[in-house]
Amino acid sequence: IIKEAHKDLSEDIATKQDSLTIFHGVMDRLNSFNSDEIYHGLIESLADFLNIEECSIYELEGNILKLKLNKGWKDYHKRPDSIEIGKGLAGIAASRLTPVTIKSFLSGNKKDVQEMDVMGDCLFAIPIVDQNEHLYGVISVEKMPFIKLTDATIQTARIICEIAATSLGNAALYNSMADKQIFDEKFGIFRYGYFLTRLNEEFLRSLNYMTPLSIIVFK
Image 1 (tube, rainbow, N blue to C red):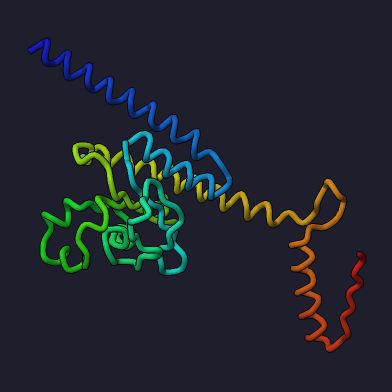
Image 2: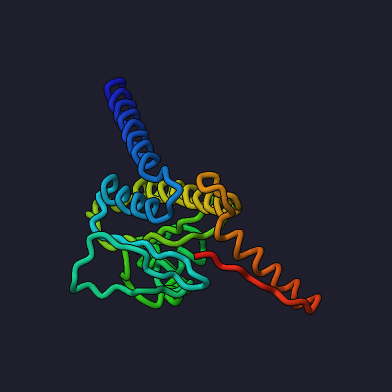
């Protein structure tokens, strides 16, 4: 009994150490204010740490998931360029804001089968969603060793996607704040974005007061 308990404890410690290694590596790759770098870091992290061979990222644009990038796809694969919310595993993951696996399709009820519309479009899909339930997109995993398709893998992938969502939120906030900076300290002039804002304001003012508007352009 003591030997079995020691074995279980050792395995538990090894598992936790592996998890720490994974998440430390993920944090390094997703530490960016550039959304493209974050998406690339996300897909590389899933491939390297979870042995995923083929996967793709669909980014939310309006009410449609648009293909952002993929890894491991072959030329003969005919994967969709866009996915409707609620259609297929990826679409359902986006609509439910929760991971969806092929297992839930095979063992699900009739309602799930009707919602899927297609069978086996991927092994599992995980929404890239932050703690405020803001959806950025979906990870679709099409190929990996089936023996690795476990609840632990799904949970790890979900956490990685949550980290990516947080990084994407930080990047969006950083970029919005950068856009609000109106003065370029290096050149000592106002930024172009500020010029466009002021131009629009003055144009509306001229319309409101029916006064002429002039612009001087230096080249």
